[in-house]
Image 1 (tube, helix red, strand yellow):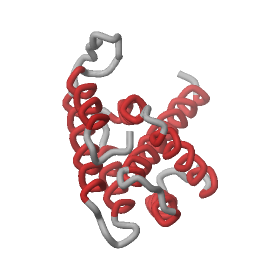
Image 2 (cartoon, one colour):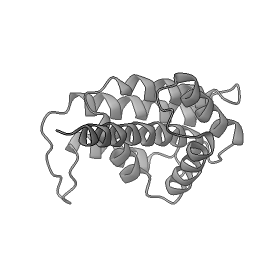
Image 3 (cartoon, helix red, strand yellow):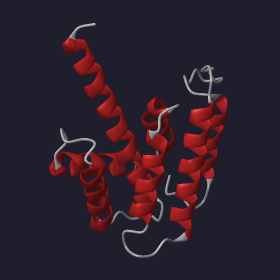
Image 4 (tube, one colour):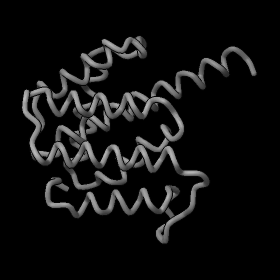
Length: 163
């Protein structure tokens, strides 16, 4: 493998992890029906504090958060969440996802029931993805483990989410 090939793979993984972090933050932010600037800023601050992704600027992270929050508010949340979190299966990054989710939930110094439910959903999805071995297609041809699809479907029907 060439050096360029390794760099490209590392950059691809970095994008996947940042996408997962943005998705987790946006999920928690939209859970209560509204997205606050302080939640976006908490995500940006968290990523900067971790210093794991120096290739991403604050405005890029903020824009990605705004875009993902908008996607989640447009009722295609479960599919977007699973697609973004799937690449984390088996990685240590799942703990980072959960930590950022908790910080975003607490960004306004209060965590409501909807945000707690979103955090529980994140934990369920990341735990299920980490334990997932081979991928099996669901009845509709989804390339995600059936149990993860079921969790996402339950979330879509759960009254605490805006979807």
